[in-house]
Length: 158
Ligand SMILES: [Zn+2]
Image (cartoon, rainbow, N blue to C red; front, side, top):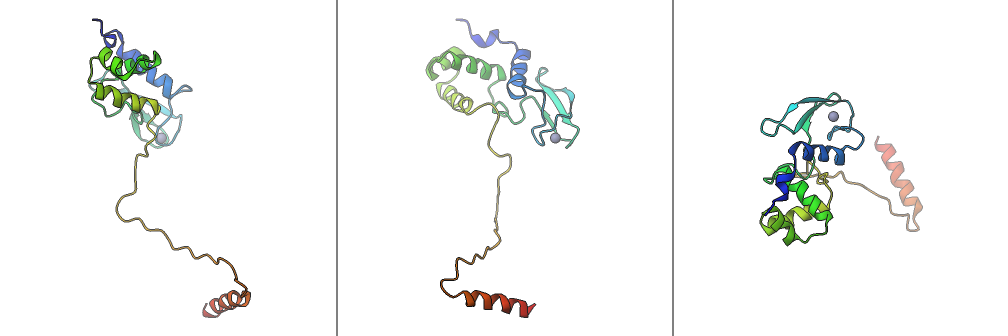
């Protein structure tokens, strides 16, 4: 059986990701700047381009901020999955075509349906979160002089 992944070229897979996420040229995922310079290649994936932002000095690569980052499946498996999705294959059929577990295939499909750029915020609030108290005068309730008086007292204190 021909495994479609073996027909995919890694360089073209990375180019596909660049075309999908940056149709108008590379943008810094941190600050959105276009002042981005190439900064070598990934140590283990030679087709994965690294960049450095001239504006915020942050470093990133082709997969930073995409759903493809931080998964054990290689990019070609994801791209093959995208291709098979386009053919309207079921999760089970895709799993068979890619030679992966059907639960893995299902997870990949769920992820890919949400788009390739990761929308989960990079930082979330942790620990104790405090909000300043907000005092709102809801209405005078027929006693405008009470509010007037309170304001006057505050002025006297100051
Ligand atoms: Zn930047």
